[in-house]
Length: 118
Image (cartoon, rainbow, N blue to C red; front, side, top):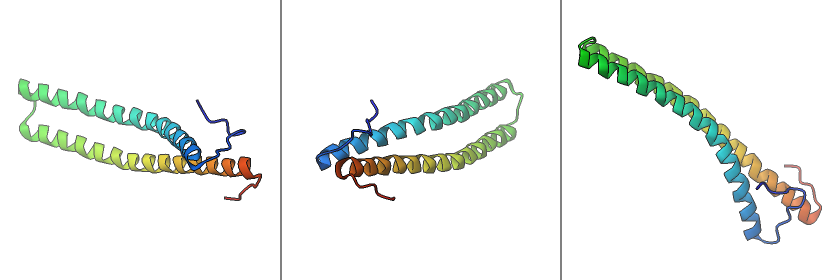
């Protein structure tokens, strides 16, 4: 259940920690869903193409050299996708950072009445 930011006023570091963990976990799960979906797509593509290469090798329809080349191209493709994932992970980390410090800002305001500028 999301934190009610209008009333979130932790009375201790432990209560603040619990709130921070909750927002960080929720934000991370949200970001992970998109990353998992993209990774699943990439790995499914690799699995399908690899199965096809194996079947072609068994049937003698493709040479060892061409099979090796095809699998190497799949490796390059995944490497490229992993570079994209680096950005997605960085983006997820930034969203977690914003969520955590957004809650800290709310907690300070709700406990003290002071609105911080960060």
